[in-house]
Image 1: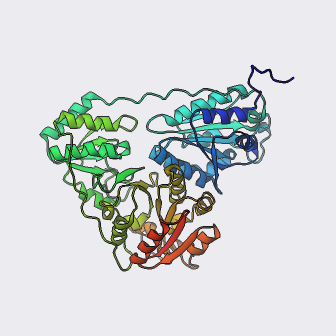
Image 2: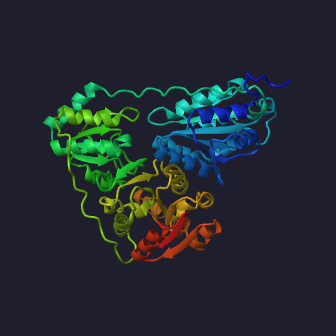
Length: 522
């Protein structure tokens, strides 16, 4: 029987899911689908409104969603194939969770009546999802699938950003009876505690050797203006956490030093701190434990006051703190002079100065330089205004897909991916998506032909080097050729051996409409 003019046309579950996602404001779907997701794919084909971007491996897909979420501050959709496909994407979902990126995963699954027969792809997808997700649900009713999706979007948007995973058995997608669900209201942001504000104000007014430690949304441009007011009024130190999801940097932003990654450097840098005020951050702890080295890198005697946590309004909290201590509304601070392009052999410090000279306006820097980045950061304090992203969860292979997703969210902003060679190989397929979508991504591969970070860690834990260990940490024999690899994925590429050559190629890449890769030999 035909539908009456007053009734909406009948739709299957997948169609109701797509309509609900679009109606809830989602704009992008990063996808690596399989058989169980074909009805969802067919619905995407019939229903305009979601930009569908394929990735050639699931960890590329989830990494793109992480990069997109950090820049857009809105969730995208990932489409993943059953439990094993979700498992392939876990590393970058782990990074996304640590970055507090909003991500919504749609994971296909076996038909409800078929799972009992233990087909090859069957697994406990819920348990896999729970390792990285704040919200997990398996759809059980086609008529309820739209409502499930609306709740998933609401959960992903919950401040400061969450991972939501909706598992959709294939028959729930193909059965008719789908119902589109309306957009749910945003969940309220938790207010900061006035008592903690008073405590932080008292410390700033009465104590010395105070560290204001910023993380999460306290590293936005607006929040930094209030932190600068507090610093100018009290003389306190202001630092950023060691690893951050997104930090506003360059001219007009605070020249924020990060807590150093190496334990010995962090302990030395923090040795005089007597009071820590955390804003979207936590007291500095080691990335790893080392024999005879404390886990906490600030002195044991240092007091800790948490002004506000991620998920609270950190900008408002810093503004209120500045007002409480009587800080003037406007503060001028100096980021220093922008460096000239350096010359000579590549080094961490030299490359940092290179970035300071050539980062374009409003760029997004995606940093997975690993060891090469140790002394790179200060050189770009006075660069043109830009945002800086890091591998928050420590799971390498984040840089190239995150740069891809950031470029999608950036809507024309140039993305610079500073990429270590070893971790590039985890998700090198990202280049294919960049070429396909013609994204403005400049990738600089730091090719030192070894896992330099692991060589450093090997010595840090007190192990004795030997030929077997060093061979495992060597990326030569044969040497990898990233120029040829990039061209194989459809990305223009060139090699540089000096800092000035690299700068010239970077500036050339900015004029290109699509991606460009530079292999910097170190």
